[in-house]
Figure 1 (spheres, helix red, strand yellow):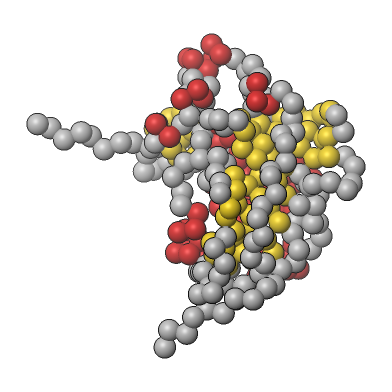
Figure 2 (figure 1 turned 135 degrees about the horizontal axis):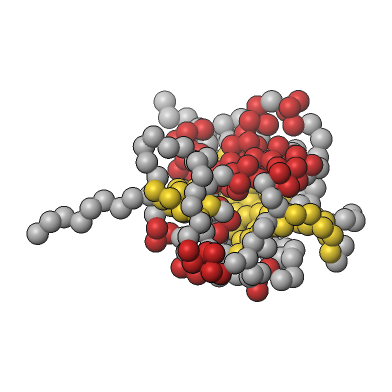
Length: 260
C-alpha cells in the first residue's frame, strides 16, 4: 500500500480569513528571541522578554502583552498567528531601542499601508474605520478620548477576532501587525476555516517562492463576491473582556533561576 503523499502548504490571502494557523507563539519567542518564564511566576504569566520589560500573559483564550512602560495589547486565539508574532517581536525591538518608538500610537502608517492596499476609510458611529475590500476586516479607532486605542478586527470561524491596542502603545506595534496582515500566510488547506475557503486567494507554496507573489482568485470567490459577513455589520467589535490580574513586568519574580 502506497503511503499518502505529504501535505503541501498553500499561500493564502487575505490573511484575515486564513484562520489562526499553527505558529506556537510562546515556543517561537523562547527559541528565537530568548523569552523565558521566571521560576516564581504566577499562573497567568506565559513568558517575559530577556530584558524583562515585557510580559506575555494568558487567561482562558485571551492573551495580553504588557510593558513596564504601561501599555497593553490584547488579542485572542482566533487571530492569525503571524499578527501577534509580528507585534510581539516589534515590541521587543522597541524595548531594546526605546528612542525608535517614542510617542503613543497614531495609526498613521498603518492607515497609509491599508489604503495603499485597497482598503477604504470612512467614519461611522464615532469611529474612524479602514475596511478591507471584502468588508470582513477593519482597523477601527474611537474618535474621542477617553477610550480604547485602535483595534484590528476580522471575521473568524466563530464570531470575530480582535487585536486591541491601548492608546499609549508604540505605533510600530500596530504597523508591524498591519504589515503581517497584508502579506499572504502559509497554511495547510484544512487550516483555512471552511466557510472562507471559497473566498480566499490560494496558491501552492514552493521552496523558491516567498510570500509576496501574486495569488489566483478561486472561481468560488468570484461567485461569492464581497458581501459583508454578518459578524462585521456593526464594526467595531465589542472590546475584549477584562483579563484576570496578570503579571506586570515592573513587578516581582523577574529573576531567572540560578542553574549553577
